[in-house]
Image (cartoon, rainbow, N blue to C red):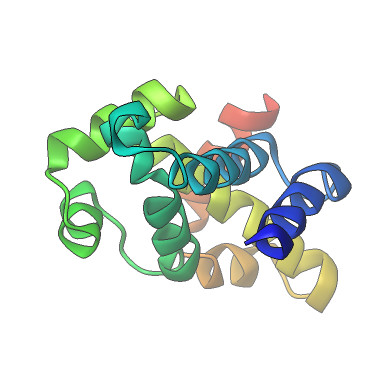
Length: 142
């Protein structure tokens, strides 16, 4: 457990410039979730305890068609619990968080693999270049 927590801690604080704010916030919540899982049951906060599982599932399925319904079904939560989890724990909606993850993946793919922006956007799970541009404008303002 100690090695896992140390790895999460280093991931949060060492790659801050490579990762976006939403991703870093997500990994921080994964760390907190891991810590909470070792507290006695009466000290846990119910929806937040599921956050690590939710974020890991999203990371593994980000290029797929992710919806609140598919996520809720995959992690065994209700759709309203998933919405509440994102709004309360991360201060974002699920679509905003997913768009942020996909945007960071697309920009990373473009840089690392030298592919076109269109190809990077489509490989990152965006349905179109238009949806990529919308997410880009919302995050960076241009």
